[in-house]
Image 1 (cartoon, rainbow, N blue to C red):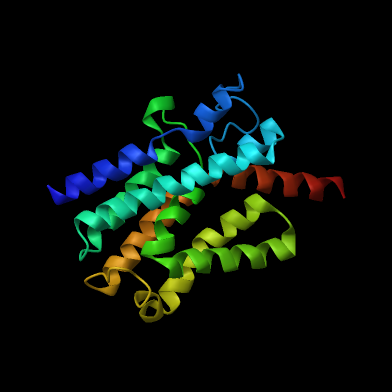
Image 2: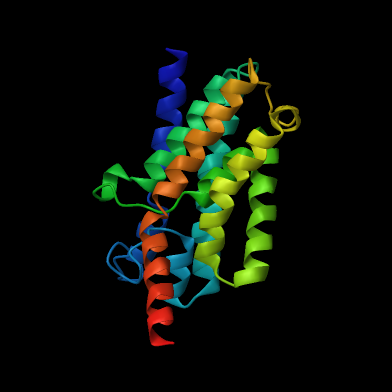
Length: 208
């Protein structure tokens, strides 16, 4: 029952279609506007409003944060329950059941949950994102590169990452499995942008 409660809390909170609801008030269907991504970046790009983008980001962030806080309040000593909550919050955000399983890319929701649950993963991802962005100045490419490389960073020194999980997992393998599952969901949502980036670079080469 504990597993089911954790999953339901995460899934329900994660499935709140923030960008869709915010943009609908402006008369815009975010699932068909711009890139079609139901997240903060596309909301900002379509609305041309930094405030709108920030509001969407903040609420999506809170979805992850509240999912973890609620489950940790119920099961304060167990890693697996907040882990399930944030995984399913990210999953339902990315594949939202209320809008035909369309959704965002999961980054804000994942950040909200991991900031108090697994800060090492979040700050590793941010560091790798910044390094990538300094070289390429491309937000989506930085998202794509930071996602698998943050997992590789954890795999390289798992004993360090293990110290920064609250509550502690039963073992390192449990932590790695959680990290891989969450990052995989996020990476899947970046496959289409990755294809577009590859096509863009191919076109640039052909034009030279």
